[in-house]
Length: 65
Image (cartoon, rainbow, N blue to C red; front, side):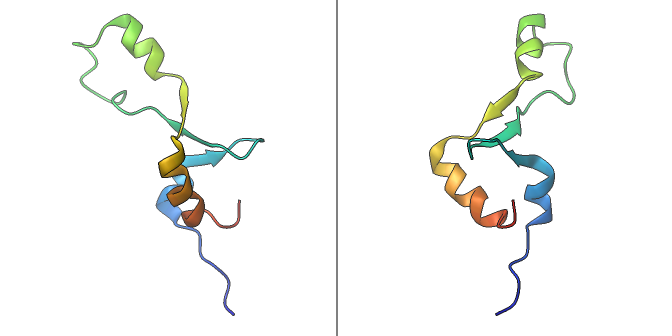
């Protein structure tokens, strides 16, 4: 049986934590930042944990990690 391939787009966006949860960057922090409040931009800097429904899909895309 051939090796399972990692989805390269997912590999660049998601990382697995030590406990097996999927970590990702928050969206809406790349441009058009002038209209967003300082507090909102500060919160967007932090990483987010993916919700359980999407975690199953992302784990299939990242078989090696």
